[in-house]
Structures are given as C-alpha cells and as structure tokens.
Image (cartoon, rainbow, N blue to C red):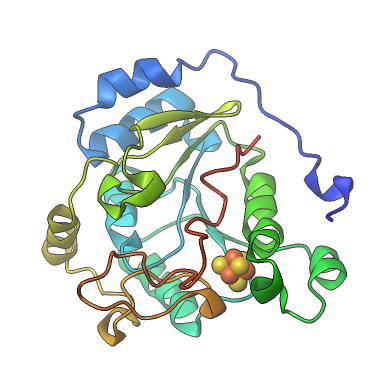
Length: 244
Ligand code: SF4
C-alpha cells in the first residue's frame, strides 16, 4: 500500500470554469485545433497541460498543439520501464515541433524502493505498478493545472469507444480533441507535417507503453491489443481514476 503522504495533493478549485457538458456540446464537431484553442482560452496556458506518452500516435496531437501554442506544458510520464526508443522519440519531437515546456515526470524513489524493490510488480500486480508509476505521479504533476488534454480516440475501442470531447475529471476539465478523429486523419497529419514515426512502429508495435507490458500487434488485431497481452487489463488507470 502506498503512504498517504504520497497521495495528498493540493487540489485546484473549479472556480469559474464552465461545465464540461456545456463545453462538450459546443465542441462536439470541432476540429482538434479548435478544441485545443478553446481549452487554452477557457483554462489559460498556465493552468493547462497536455499529457503525452510520446507513443506511436502522439506526434499528431503534439503537432496540432504546437501549431496552436508550442509553450503549453507537456507532461510525459517516465515510468522507469520505457523503451529507450520512446525516450529518444521524445527528444526528436521536442526538436522537430519546437515544444517549449516538456516536463518528464518520474515516480518517487522512496515509493519504488518501498513497493517495487525488485521491479517485479508489473508481473505480480500490474494495477499496483501502474498506480505507483503512472497514476500517482500524474496526479502530482497535474496538481497545479485546472485542465488537461490527452490524445485518446474513439476508434481505439474498448473503454475509449464512447469518450466525450470534454469531460469533468474531479475539479479539472479534461479535453479529448482527437475523440472524433479517424485513423486515416491521424495518418494524414503525419504525412502532411512529415512527422517521424515512433522508432518501434516499423517493427510491428502499433501502440507502445512500458517494456514489460507491450508486445507486437498483428495486422488483424486492434491497435492496443499488444498492451498487457494475456491479461484482462486494458488501461493503466490515468483515464479511469479521477485525477483529483
Ligand atoms: S504499464 Fe506495466 S510496467 Fe508500466 S506502470 Fe503499468 S504495469 Fe508497470
């Protein structure tokens, strides 16, 4: 179990932010750039963050964001189990897109040494592993923000098949500018902007997360079929646990 001290975080207040449902209605058919611009206008740059895994489709969201405002803070969760290729890809995209505020967030050392000293938690209890390496670090990283943006798409299926464009996430607004976007539209963004692919994409990884929990995907499988293969788990928790 994690110590309470690791989890007690200052919470932003909703203040005068509009309701998520109201924004969702207004942005239901908006383009990703319009959603990001509205998020910026609504929340303000100092209190808005993009959360990116720098995975196989991440460059599309980061490109649209950079075109709106390259100084929006980008939170990247460096779990301690990422592929070297992902860390290299982060640096390639920072340079290519001129991202001005990428924050690489790591789990607390004392939490890792207490709860995962042998680095085997991913095998024995992957939910607990995701909690200490992703969910808790992200909750800490998002503490100063009143809104966050992520790159989930409905076409990814599973729990993502019905996501709204704007959701309430505790006291924060959560923007999903790519909710309506198709795989073909993502590919078009890559093509038009000449975005480099993730270094592992050519090896058959359609979705890339942590090393122990990522496998290659065959052409007839869903994009995320290679994540936590053989387990019922399909999400790490950052989108299923309220970030408050
Ligand atoms: S994806 Fe796997 S290694 Fe990464 S935090 Fe979750 S369980 Fe741990």
